Length: 345
View 1 (tube, one colour):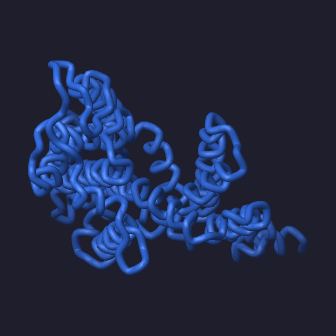
View 2 (cartoon, helix red, strand yellow):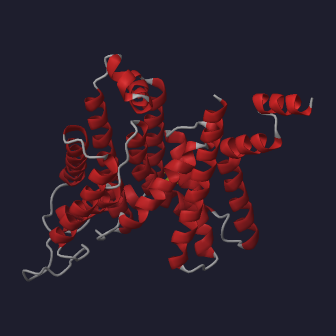
View 3 (cartoon, one colour):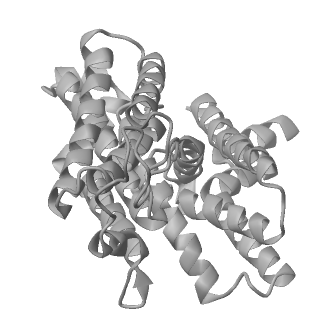
């Protein structure tokens, strides 16, 4: 009799262990965010202030853009490790176009985006045409692009009136109109926050309410079935990697406008945060898949946590331990839940 009751509990998912796993999968990230905010607000009066949250949202906006690109590649069952290097290259190119070459704003915004398109296209060629596994292809591109941006700058960051290796000083400066993109305010919120909100909503609508979004998820779920349904899988994957490159370039442009200079290797530390944000977002409200709103929520969790640790004067070199721990926890909950669900089915 006890065996029958136990079997029935497992079938209905009513055992305490399964209930706990389901709760953590659906609401764990939200509970973690609430705990983080509550804890840091009790230990520091500076945490719950408009100025601090304004800084957090500015920081989150850049990570979110980077993470949205990774989201699109994960949707098609891929992965892009080169987003950090692409962001770094876009950052220094954006700054150099104004500082070194004194180009107009529209070109300064357009050319880095084309770099993102090119990076995504090369990734797609390696993965879709040559058949190299996505992790290996994008890892190779990560090193190639990182080498390109260091070679381009000769290892120097780019800033107004910088001395040139050829002699003299740089003729241009980062314009006020450009800096407004990263430092300005509109309707009481930082401009980067508005950019982030718009792009998150656009990504959400595309992935969840358009035919192309359904095709992306279909391709990632079962590429063979998608092919039999008439989907051009290669074209879909190609587009996803190009979108990832564009998002990485937008993150680079926004970063340059925020800090007012072109920093080498700017995207390297943010790549891990972007990946963590995407995987934390998997489980938000039980989505169980890469999704735009979950990615934003994951970026918020990572950003608020790191901000609170900074306020507590935790050494910066310990931050990677925290980011890695959050990523491991998110992956553990996601994959334990998936394993339980698969075993039941």
